[in-house]
Image 1: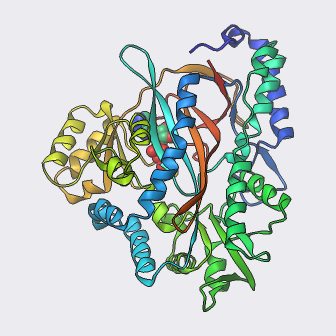
Image 2: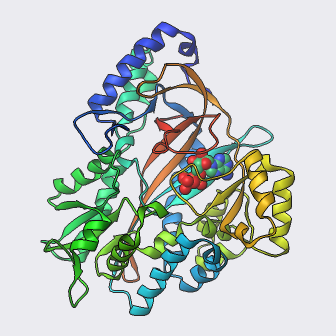
Length: 474
Ligand code: ADP
Ligand code: MG
């Protein structure tokens, strides 16, 4: 998997020069983030962390990841419409995990009332690592699929130009010309625009639901800009605003400050800390409305780790996607080993196996956003403590994926420039729109490569661990 610039990695002067160019290029291209010190001000901003060099990605695995994305879109959409599957799959989880339970209760309440929403918009990102088998052949293995607030579609479209510049500065213009164009933000906006159009009210707006701390606002603005360019009005609001000023009319049309809302795009609401009692009420109001939620609460639940684990059981994919044997095979080929820790013989066996050999596994709770999983000794200690208690069912177990590390420089504001052993995670963005029972859009719309130093087991870009990267196909 060697890239054609191994020689320059040892040339310190050239690396120093390229890093200075890279940072300026990132600022010029808009690879931006607000600062930790002032997370809600744009007066002072900095570059989002990124690699100095692109990372080598096997082209066959890259193509495989793109080729399976429409299948994953169909799968997530099918799960979201399958009340029995979600109910059965999450039954053990919601007994012990309050957050999932609350989401689930809203899901049930909305179904009982009858869905007012008839247009559905899914934006997801399926993440993978390249697992190095015993013979050294890398295989594409899914880490997870994010069905809510999948980020970095905007900023990642701007790293290509930065890495192209770096390669030219380092005397590798041919390598620069081989970097693939990538604009997932545009694809996301096309999906949102389609949903807005099908909602069918010219004067209605798109509402981005955003968090209190908005360091990653520029990533969101990239999607927003694409909508303004199509003359679609965008407003940014928080759950609290919805609680205070949101309302439904008799037809369950959603209004914010007197404006009808066609699409609610969540960049918030995926972790417990996003919610207090008022925010839960606001979420319920949004879910009951006719507005297109991206995602609706069923689709959010379809992205839980517990659902991911149940999908790996023999026969499950076949039941969810009847008559689609090829899609099922493509999806299954990306699965790593996933194991339930539900009470019973199977769970007992896996808990014992993980305590005996913690390096083989990752222990995952039903959380998003990075930094929640347990590894190695910590995994062993936690699991040993809860192995005979129902608490263990709030987790799933997954085989640990072991990619081949490669050397790169991680550029981060205020950090020294030094070489790191790194591994990468490839994400593919998927967008789909359904009206009633009919799919009207189903696409893979771009990719995201994130890279981190091997000493960190967990964590994404927002968590301060991984950095933005660009794939160089080999
Ligand atoms: P989150 O929802 O918090 O993003 P993930 O399942 O994506 O949860 O895990 C977070 C990070 O942990 C991933 O980005 C990856 O770096 C690491 N990770 C997760 N699962 C595995 C695995 N099976 N093998 C190796 N690393 C993993
Ligand atoms: Mg993740």
